[in-house]
Image 1 (cartoon, helix red, strand yellow):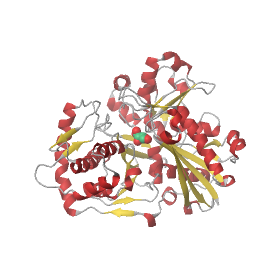
Image 2: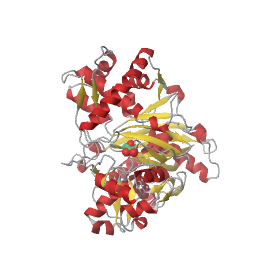
Image 3: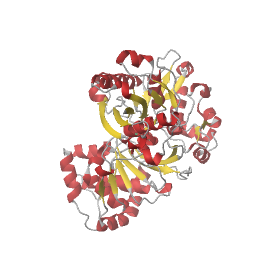
Image 4: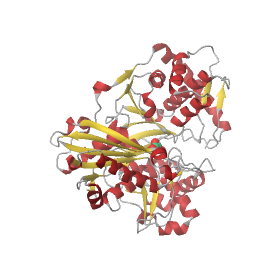
Length: 511
Ligand code: XUL
């Protein structure tokens, strides 16, 4: 038996998942367990809150790259000390929060101590400049898969170049979190994969190559500072001698890292068009595989590369777990009480209480000035708020994923909050489709382990079929079916919610 290690460097934690497989029968792999380091708790010296550095401007969201580096060291040490049979580790891959950028000098020092991450929304000006210079938002979306978005790396790089041109000049390589972590593993600059590179507004989706008009629109000399782009299944090197001498790891193969969302696609067993997953994490995301890149005309979502070599569509909502936690804390509830309130409250009357979930700047729809917006909802109504926040999130998810053109017959739920049965029941009712929850909570880390296995087998000349290797343990699945009365109710409520959202946007600065 060989072991395959998948790492996920997310916003708040670093997780390692292990699967075991006989390399001759890769599709019969078994889950071997996972372990996590939580940045705020386990690396308190970096003083982050939910993995983010404190900032007085709510639009700024940075994290220290030295924290991700320290977490990787700590995780590999932990695996070595916990008696994992290191010599059996055949391959390693990983996933990371998307868009965040790491600026490194030729000697490995950082030219920027803090990395802008996906929660940053401070680059509206740079987005407009890039869109204009690259031929307009439609053109940029057609070629790169997305209009310019604040958190996408191009706008962040442009802002850095404008604010600190000397430090930009000194920067040898601009990595994404994924290629930065992979570089630490192989001991030299690692390339990107098309899944994560598509989150920069700089790559031509059709060819997986850097697109010169977008590079020119972003900052001078950028081409020379970017890593290469290789197919996701590429073995990019072996574990560097440091890890071998320090902890006794073998020279295991390292497969290119990707973004957490492309990785979750594999960890959620989504390889055929028409399947969708909803991940309830720091951000809520809805995503699914796409054979051909169909770009959102309204700018609601993005197309990224998928680890299978095809594409994926995704819409991201910044106010995910954070908004659910805000409502829980506003009324001093625990999760059990939150769930009970969600379960008990039945819709009644023509005036239905609603809430817009914009506690922090929102990505979809674009909201730069956050704040609570209520409709027929009393400030002191705890149960009303609990129901309204979850319903609003699910209705927004449905509304803003219609551009993908997929009417899902089944939805796979992942992410921390998918552990909550009552949240998944609302999801099934709003979407009018059965929702399946798999047993493995961290689909990005699992997807990375599966990608390590796939990449190693492909390098040995036996690439496994994706639909045979990307699987979950169906015996552990739990399915939530839509309730006919609630499904009908939400079908009626959806246009009302859409109108409420449009009114809310009028007062909350839409793009
Ligand atoms: C994707 C996005 C988030 C991060 C979260 O576009 O911004 O889902 O990847 O880690």
